[in-house]
Amino acid sequence: MRDDEWLNQRFEQIWQLFFPDVEKKNVSIRWKGQWKNKFGHITTKKDKTTEIAINKIFQNLQVPEDVIKLTIAHEIVHYSHGFHSHLPRKYKHPHKGGVVDKDLMARGFSYMLKKEKEWQKNEWYNLYKELMPHKFKQSKIINKKKNLLTYFKI
Image: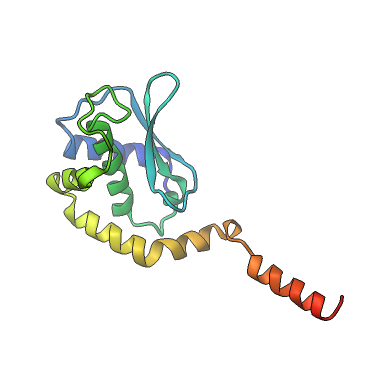
């Protein structure tokens, strides 16, 4: 499993290597949530600090490290664009016109973007289903049992 220290080390490495031009002020990162439809998010906490949250499912070693690194970088791009940070906002909408992917490509993440899209399309849903089986409804099985019970008047 990947722990908090591992996540913080990756966060610091990515910021230093790929975002040295972005002033880092009152921002932290943590594992949070177990989302099917998002890999991470950025928010402002009540104390006005910035928090980047990475899907807790990504602690599992079956998730490629490049996907996690790209997710971290994606959230740092939002920060650099002035979303949930002290920096001036560059855009009205955080994803309009593909600004995040364009910034990631300019910073050298093209390979990871392609790899992440393939992984998300081909593997993510099945991995989520494997790791989070309790999140999937058993309605088809239940409905079949109800129909059989009704048919046999049990």
